[in-house]
Length: 383
Image 1 (cartoon, rainbow, N blue to C red):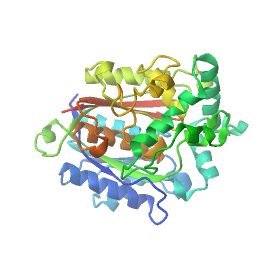
Image 2: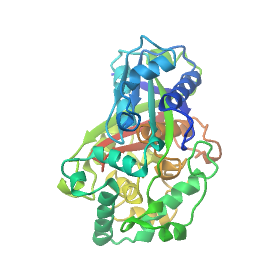
Image 3: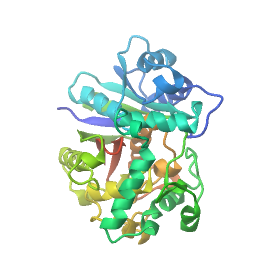
Image 4: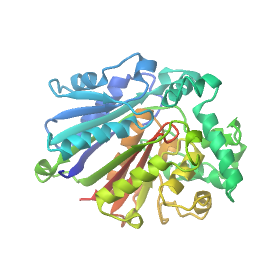
């Protein structure tokens, strides 16, 4: 298998883009990534998107993006894996490079959630679970997270205040970030005073609704040496589990994420302690805590305590969500994983601006579909 490199990134600001289309947002990110890499064309295009067929009544996004950026004739496909759709597109694209079938592949993730009401978006997210069982019973993604939250507090020596530190952390890092949806700080008191969406989960412990697109330009070894753009080496792994966490042996342990993290580290040839930055799928505060614990970066019940102690700050042991994560940078579903990897790339190529974490040579992005039924883990290394 050949090596795979990230050679270019493109990001749009996450916001409620009332005046723009999903196609327009994704085309902007795609063109930016191609220009950043300095290539003139690509061999394939992969698009990550979850709910375009529901909110925009539009499928066939691969062909639409190839047309929008003037690359007709290029094989182009949409990939879907719930909230990990962008990561699934990245996985597919990287396999083309690694197999030697392509020298340059464009990966674009995009979502336009503001085209739907909050209730419609929440219903669309439940397509990541079993609609005939869970959603039909009146459960939602947030209520499932709240159940895990209650179990977590009951089974571990932890508190709601400790878990609620994760949105505070994300907003701290997002302050002043140009592409972040919520680029401002919040206090723990403000999080704890926000209304419940499903007790004990509070509104400020959940990611909001936003629109955005991000893109990556992947290249293989043959092309990498010919480009002047800064590059990082990519290693990616994926795994799946039961859709409902309550069908698993331990609902508080994301076994798919554990497997994918171990595999990605093995592919990269590094140890867990060599990871210098972690981009978490913090769709809710409890997902952030469970992700760190399941992937081996924290002991069980300890993630919140580590957050309180500053271990995940920009100057901490494991800087987490260095541009704000899903909570503060924003969570435009199909684009989220692409934002995560693009932000890691900016960090490792010393282009992270005021959020630059120095001296780190490798980072990990964790992308989850549903309640960790799909897990895709990407490790980037300095090239």
